[in-house]
Length: 394
Image (tube, rainbow, N blue to C red; front, top):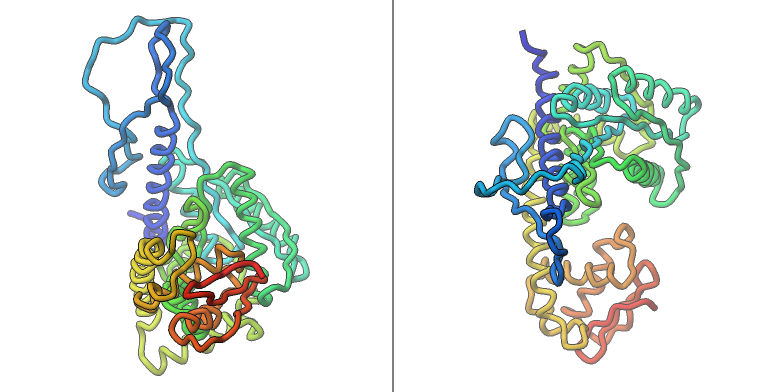
């Protein structure tokens, strides 16, 4: 008899992500491997080392690791040379799981520990001690012990100091991701798995809607994010109850963070009051609908971002300044993306640049009445001069 359906679901979700990571690892390794030359042949000059041609193979098309290249046509083998160094295969990739000890991340850790060895992938885990509750260091040590019992290596706890910028939730998130980035670089890992579920995605969409931040906020969390795609979220199509059920049937101990039930936190109020009220008013299926909205919004936002990148060159003059008349001719959604990119490039912090800032800059294009310069976060100033939009450090 096979595993419980909840266990099978979490393992399948993790297996798919690991296949993607392994395929990318093999492809990148092949690209970095220079072509070998026959011993005694003259050195290559005037050109970089050749690389083996690649073929793209969908990871779901094969049961195991995807081959990274095709074999060339047969040709006579060169004479054997006992003195040539043997080819050393690249070490297998390391994948870490970020684990708080809660049901979502413990289910993720168990699935990673089960699936990774079958694909020849090394698996480890990390828990972040935010230091926000008494005994958090002891709890972090317990999580590390559970990760090691699952067979994850390395398994470690990292203590962080949570600041105050952006409120307690945002500050804790920033500290956590900084610690995960450092752990990933320290261990040379290929990716970190995060246990966000479909319920978390629905909450994120509602928070974005409440902020009025635009379609990018409504797109929620990406399945792949971070520099070089380092963060992966296998559970975005699974609900929170599936993860909890998988822990229960596997007798995995879990810890319920009291902050998740504390009404002082916005997400907690949304989880325990907002979403239940919506489901009572609108019926079941709200979470699924919000998650589907996130994916549709992400597709639209990606398309508009691509359009803005392509259009940006056409609205700059020879000196690189933005021309107001050409910006005016663009659709608002495209124009405002160009303005946002320009402000960030000038030094405005992306996390502090809100929709109201972009709307003020946009009025210099669409509602010009001789108004003065606009002050933006990061001491950046935007002003209109001679039909050009100048965004620079003030």
